[in-house]
Image (cartoon, rainbow, N blue to C red; front, side, top):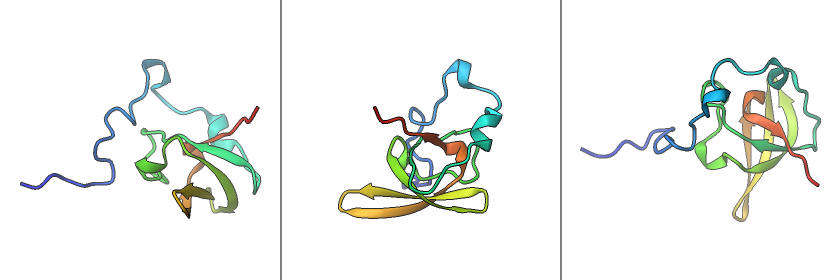
Length: 98
């Protein structure tokens, strides 16, 4: 039998939460408004399946392009290509550049 190549294959370590992070997500994470042009880190929250980006974008830094409904369009460099993905705010964090 062939191995499954599903959307969340080989993510047991990648999408695991620490014991103190488990439970409901913070309301401030949902209500945070991102401005177009601001940098964000894509950090997938495994407890929220809606608006979840692909595992290859986990930990990547991108720029907000626009807001689409509740979600945001984010542009990310992947090799030579620039990808545009749609992500919900549960899976985003503001990028703090020093």
